[in-house]
Image (cartoon, rainbow, N blue to C red; front, side):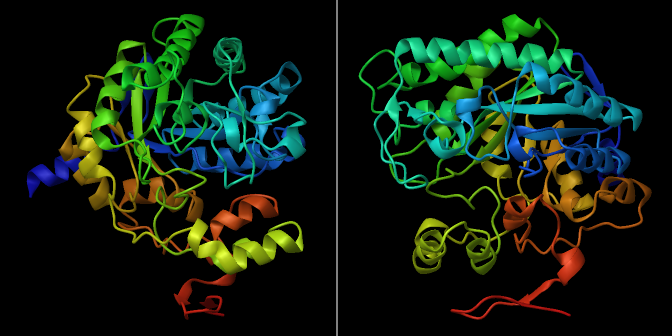
Length: 411
């Protein structure tokens, strides 16, 4: 009993990633905010992350920031550029005043990118049909690959100059780097395709290029997939080898996640599928009707369990020497205790902090032991309505689901 108490307290003790000392072991996960209209760094985005910092998290993660305009999936996503720097500095300064650190999640959507929003045809590892966009991408040339490497490096340097304490490279969830890693989307016959070694070449080179650009010690976290959750996709044994390669190329910490946005989008979250709310925020009747009729084929249901990625993430934990950050179903002090005892140096928390930005302080003070997030996932459609927030805080919790109709709420 005494040992459990000591380990629980470890979550609230300082920890280090690269040369960055964090006040505790709890990081706000890179959950897309939907608060960057026209690619801006809005006041609402700053207020959102400042509230997280006030709430006790050691570091908050700003997501999603594309390394190039053409790498965005939506018009309300940021991309790194010079005219954004003053507002990014306002954001990092505001978070630092609350005693927290701040990271920015850098990525490129690849074949998820929106031509309507970027004016560019999406690119990808191979000419693989994308159900998410109902389109085929342009296959990337070696020149394209080198250009994106440079974009990642430049974006990381700008992030450092803007006051971000770390960068998180998004190499999971089916985004561009994951599209090269996954045999499902990578059918190339050149040195970037085929064997796992070849498929790792581009993502590993991005990590190496970023490390060279930001210098030694500056924290580089890498979000990666344990599994894509699809037939012919990436699996856990591959992930272990990829983790070792990222470590060798200069990653400071790894965040093993799962799921493929265009095929298994809620695998990374689990819980309820808020179909009717997702239908409501679609633009155009064709999209609304399509999601209503075929939504269950595109957005499957995955049962929620606490710590649902821990067992597979431990395989990565045992394979590398750098910190591994546990993500997925961390909603209580007991979950923190379990993660620390298993050897994870840090955890990332998403929905529990969205539900209550003060949850880390409350856990540390012993005011509550368990988040009251019910994993209804109605926060997801809110991203397209002006910004992510917990709907339970305004409409009440989800109390019942009836087959074929929308959910009912407590008044």
